[in-house]
Image 1 (cartoon, rainbow, N blue to C red):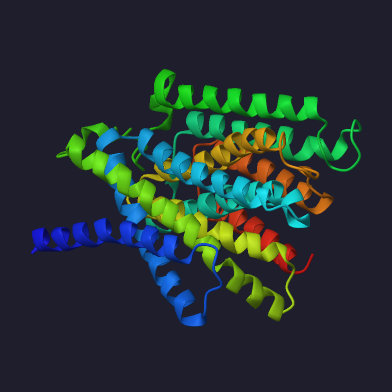
Image 2 (cartoon, rainbow, N blue to C red):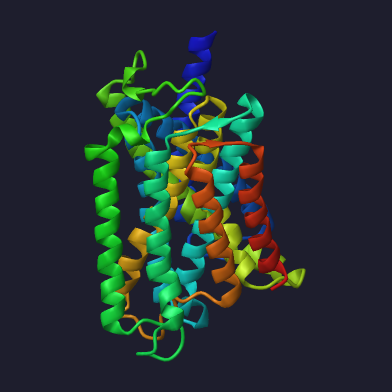
Length: 366
């Protein structure tokens, strides 16, 4: 019976990414009627589940922290490509698109994914246990990247508005690449043990020790299907965005809500994977996914938009407003206090989720 279930799962997780990309090709750039939007939404949900499945197959083959790194980087690369594509369309929305998308990703990952993972683990085992050394290094990198890329532009004076001058933008892009590269080296080579899961009993779990990992051929197939699934997730999310925009406008919500909804859809694979890891007492894997996604979002988006700004016309607004800076500061302070002990309770998870709720509330009622 279990073999039959695995065979059925294997078939649909193989077929859905391909079908999602085919549907994306058929619907890209077109105005979609209601029934087609419903069909796209169904395939979007299926592509999310397929992406999580293939990410877990790859993670089982390569072990932690490589597995969570693969999913985080894959999602972010596709997201960055989408941002740059939308920026080429121009318009007033393009000026702050990179900033809004990156900040939404930081808030959703650092408060949503992290908070939900800690909450679930604490509910199941009273205390969520993780590796303080690795998590604090990841959180410190996110804080530095966010400060350099999203806060400083508000206070620089070389160019009017919350923008970087060309030399400053080049420095921010270089710093983002170098810091992200150093973190990946630390995570995967020099101090890999800092990012391995820790069970509630304090035992370090090396995912490479799990029995019966998939073969190299199966892992490579899943890696390709993961890429297809993520292309489908991001592309189909963009395809349903006009319907979301119409719905948001119909109820009188700010236009920024659309970007948050799209970010929530794009980050669904990481969210589901993180929740599933937390239920298996692998909180460190959940934190690797959440903080890794935030870091990759900044570390890859800022250099990409800096390069794109060479040929794109119009301003590139990166600096946050006062309200968002307060939320970012609270996130960094609470996150630091959360990761230092290496243990968290229901309260820490609730604090992060409260900050995410505040961000969503202020997006609806600025």
